[in-house]
Amino acid sequence: MAAKILHGIPVSAGISIGRAYLLSQGHYCLAPMQSISQDLVEVETARLNQAFAQALESLQQIRKQIPREQSDHAAILDTHIMVLKDPKLRQATEHYIRDMHLNAEWALEKGVADIESSFQGIEDEYFRARVQELRLLTRRVMNQLLGNNDSIKSITSRVILIAHDLSPADTVELDVSKIMAFATAQGGRTSHVAILARTLEIPAVVGVEDLESSVSDNQFIVVDGFRGQIVIDPDETELTQYTDLKYSFEAYQKEVIRKRDLPAETRDGHRVQLHANIELFEEVSKVLDYSGDGVGLYRTEYSYLYRVELPTEQELIEEYRDLASILHPRRLVIRTLDAGGDKLGHGFEHLEEANPVLGLRAVRFCLRHQDIFKTQLRAILRASQAGNISLMFPMISGLGELREVLSVLDQTKEELAAEGLAFDAEIPVGIMIELPSAVMIADILARYVDFFSIGTNDLIQYSLGIDRTNKYVSHLYQPLHPALLRSIKRVVDAGHKAGIEVSMCGEMASDPYCLPILIGMHVDSLSLNPQSIPWIKRILRKLTMEECADLLTRILRLDSVSESNKLVRETIFKRFPDELQFHSSILEEEEE
Image 1 (cartoon, rainbow, N blue to C red):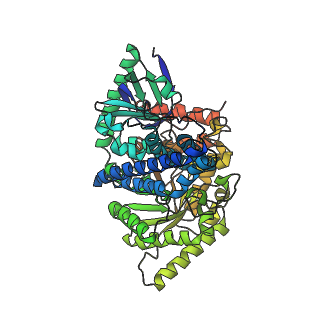
Image 2 (image 1 turned 45 degrees about the vertical axis):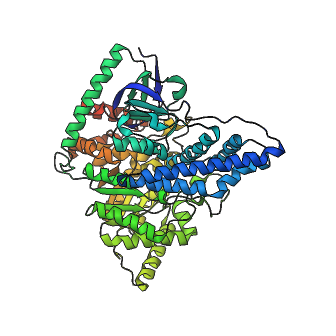
Image 3 (image 1 turned 60 degrees about the vertical axis):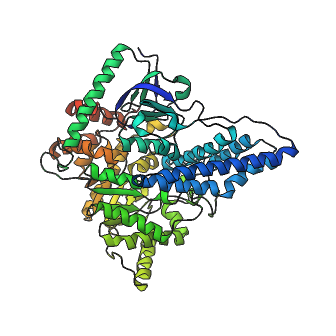
């Protein structure tokens, strides 16, 4: 029996067996707290400024080394370089030296903690990941202050990398050919290391409790990217089981990839579009690699976060045009900015909102700041000449709000036309259905748009009133809750009755247990992470519409989540016992 098994979030499938390399030792340091006398204030301030300058120089050197094929890393590092250059972060830290007489290391800790605290209460996992990146960025300054010269480049043999977390700059310096798997104490499904692991297709588990205190350098471990487990010192029996699973998965992957170009249709010929959710430019290549039908959700927030200056219209045009060009003739659905001023860095009003997730964000923020909104709309419209771009608005709560955003869109079109600038006047326009209010009036909203995209991650949270990241209530995050299933069906039926397409871009779209139910509802397209496209297609091709419709009929008659989960688990596992051993599900938690 293993010495210990740790649990985290599985973010990249696969099994890896090998020796641990504990990067966190000597790489992540806690600052010593010291009070300083008045005559040392200038000395500590000078140390701080020098550390910022050295960290900035090291980032700029890394930036120069980025190969052309990793252009997204360059964009991320450009953003980090701008953050380090921004005097406000440094001034926030200097305040603790000059006014509180703290040493530079502790002042930096306090300054970063202040920034982190301003983001408390944000439930969106994506933005939490970006805040974590800020912590990783300032760690580079801390290492300069502490004289810590340990480098990620010191890894010379094939290892399983154990770290507190990894920044984009870390990963640029990393020789990925030496990495068998990742395990980190921090991070979520949208953290940089999670995206990197999926892109590289190596096993990864993030958010592992007690990771750094439980794993030693060079210790023999197993990373289980299916179940989200780190097995420390496995015994012979466990080692044999994991080795068999590893080889079985590798054979399975080859078979899935070999058939990736087959049509995404059921055995009786029902075709479903399989699109991808992406947020970084580099992910678009995976959409092509895995034969996706296009991009069903391009999150545009990354181009805005932590910038000193907002992106210009021309910058956004080039970004959207390049994406559309690579994907052409496949579809590219661009979601407008889904953020609030509290997450966009400097220059915005910072409203005191008790719950920013339910506050001034997404189209609400865009309608209040129409200059930002119009800049993005102009860029999307001008890029739409490519002919394969669709536009999607997030977080629409009602008809009045939808009319407002459509009015701004019409104004923008008129302005472009008056300026003689070309665009696709008939660009398809859709909305995300992620609020219960939008579900209830889906039949009304459907008259005004060309498509719906159901965002199940938020719809589940808003409908059930729970925060899935809150450990006290996360077990209530139940995709098969009768209210959710009825909501989704209501939206699909309303969309189809109005003659518009209905897609889904939440995690349910990539869950094998949910797939037959969604197909039974006649969802037109599914948008999921690119790597999941081939194996969802594989399961889809083994289903029939008749069995999907039968399962849907039976599950809609049930009264509780427990009954729904039991029915789906038994039915789907019986159909795909070999497939499901390689995939995790969001139905892990059962209602008590």
